[in-house]
Amino acid sequence: MIGYELPLEALKEWLRRGGKPNRLIALARQLPRSQGPLIAALETLT
Image (cartoon, rainbow, N blue to C red; front, side, top):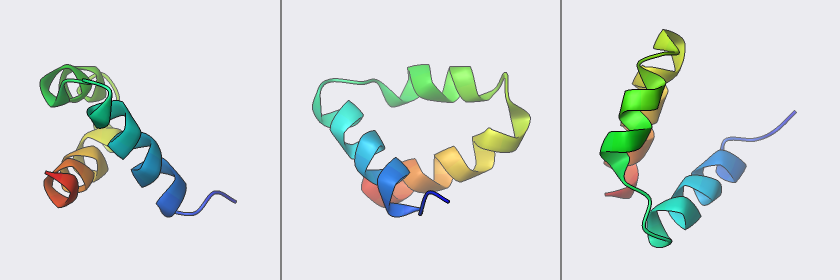
């Protein structure tokens, strides 16, 4: 099982490389169960 740390580190790296949070949120809207955790993670990191 993957821990919570691995996805957070991947998200940090993606943001560091110029990833846009709005683009990621738009993609998450297509997967409704992912939107809440994604927004929480972004709020934690930004």
